[in-house]
Every structure is written in structure tokens, then in C-alpha cells.
Amino acid sequence: MVMSDNARGLILAVASSAFIGASFILKKKGLKRAGAAGTRAGIGGYTYLYEPLWWTGMVTMIVGEVANFVAYVYAPAVLVTPLGALSIIVSAFLAHFMLKERLQKMGIVGCVCCIVGSVVIVIHAPQEQTPSSVQEIWDLATQSAFLIYVGATISMVFALVLYFEPRYGQTNILVYLGICSLMGSLTVVSIKAIGIAIKLTLEGISQIAYPETWFFVTVAAVCVVTQLNYLNKALDTFNAAIVSPVYYVMFTTLTIVASAIMFKDWSGQTASSIASEICGFITVLSGTIILHSTREQESANARGTVTWYVGGDSVKSVEEEHLVKLSNSDYLERQEFT
Image (cartoon, rainbow, N blue to C red):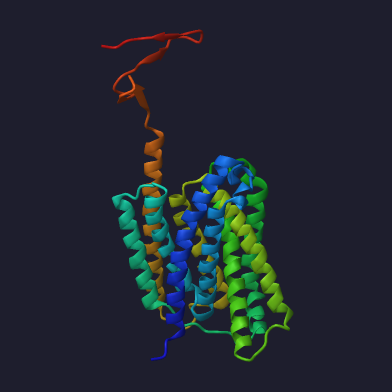
């Protein structure tokens, strides 16, 4: 039985999600170790480059990205990209056991939503329509609609880097992840073009001599380096269980938009199939939002808890007993309550 291109893409996308989900946790642990020994990545440090665990996570991510790269060669972005939700499930469960970031019951509901939505997308995904040459891909990339998207993306990235990052980067997760996601959408279309060029070359139709091939390679390299830099900052600054779903939602949405504009993925599909894919995508987004809100609520509760250690052997909350009262700015008055 011959396996279809979509089936190959599906298997590779699932494997990619498993590796990428694990890489988030390994890199997070490596960043925490490096931050304890030197300058944190979130404030411009690069001591994580000397941390073996961070490199283990990086290698794991590279394996996952390679699998993802090949998946885009065989299947359209509207199928491959949403399956990245599975990496959220992997990272959430690993964070529960390895980082002690507790996964609540509603978090499990969010994981189920991600799986259900992914299944709906797989069932209704369009078949891949592979261009016959890299020059044909270049024609798609230089159409006016996609050039407008590229111009808007680059403008927003510069605005985020030059204006918003210095002011809000340490407090608003959307700054770092916005840069990652915007650049990521360009990475995907570039990598898809490179993958198709490699596939055609292996089939005997060499695409190496075309300058367009090397242009796509350059764009992909710049975008990947930028993504990794700002993803490290996001992971070092914010909770890993929050970074993963928010990054997924933004990255997936922008990638599907970019791919739909450039490659016309939905061309030839019926309205019902497109509607089903959109519903599946919304279900996946709902799952990631549930995961996000669950982790955010837990984080807020943790920050609002204050405990007092009394007598060395018992613990009381601040609501149960006030041991110290500030009377004025000059001295502290100890006050006993009965």
C-alpha cells in the first residue's frame, strides 16, 4: 500500500511535535541553571551557551524542526502547522513532572480540545499541490498580496524590537512571542520553498543553480536565528507552560495566513471543508487558551500566598495571625493578638 504525501506529512508533524515539546522543557531547565550561575538570558545574558542541558534541548529542537521541515514538503501548512498543538500537550505534561509546574484539571480539558481540533483538521486537510520549480515558487512569493504581507510583517517586527521590547519586553509576553511568530511565518514559507527545491533536485530536476533557492535559504537562516534569540528570552522571562500555548496560537495563525496567501492552500476546496478546518483550528485555539488561563491563574495564586514560619515547627498564613505591625517609619512595634 502506497502512503500518500499527506500521510507522510502527518507522521512527520506528530514526531516533530513530540521532539519540540520536550525541547521547551530541556531548554527551560538549562536556562534556569545558567541563570543561577550568571546573567539571565531575559536581560541579555548568554551564559546558557555553556550549559549542556540547554544544548540537549537545542539538539532535540533541531531534530523536531528537521522533521517539521520535511513535513512541509509533503503536506500543506494548513495541515502541518496546527498539529504543533501536540507539542503544547507534551511540554505541559513534562513541565508537570520535570519543572513542578502543576497541570490542573482544566489544563487536561485544554489538551483534549487540542487533540480533537487536530483530528478535525487532519480529516479535512487539502492535498498538497507541489510547484514544479523554484521559479514557480518565486512567482508566488512576488505576487502583490504576499509582498504586502511581508512588508507589514517586517514593519511590525522593527516596531516591536525598537520600541516595545525596551519598554515592555520584561512584562508583556506578547512582545517577545510576537517577534518570534511574525518571523516564524516567513520562516515556514521559506523552508517550504527550500524543501520543495531539495525534493525536485533529488528527483533529478536540479534547483541549486537558481539564485531564488539561495535567497530563500538566506531568509530562512535570518528568521530562524531571530526566532531562537527571542524565544530564549521569552522562556527565561515567563513560565514555560504559558510560553508554549501563546507562541503556538500566534505562530500558527500567522503561518496559516502567510501560507494561504502565498501558496493558495485552500484553492479548490469546498466551503464545507474550509469551514471544518476553521472550526478545528478554533477548537485547537480554545484548548491552548484554556491551558494558558489555567497556568496563569495558578501563577497568580502562587504570587498571592504569604506564609509565616512560627516557632520553627508550624506554618500560619498572614490571615491567621499577624505577628508584626508597622506603627510608624521609625520603629517596629511587636503586637500580640489573642
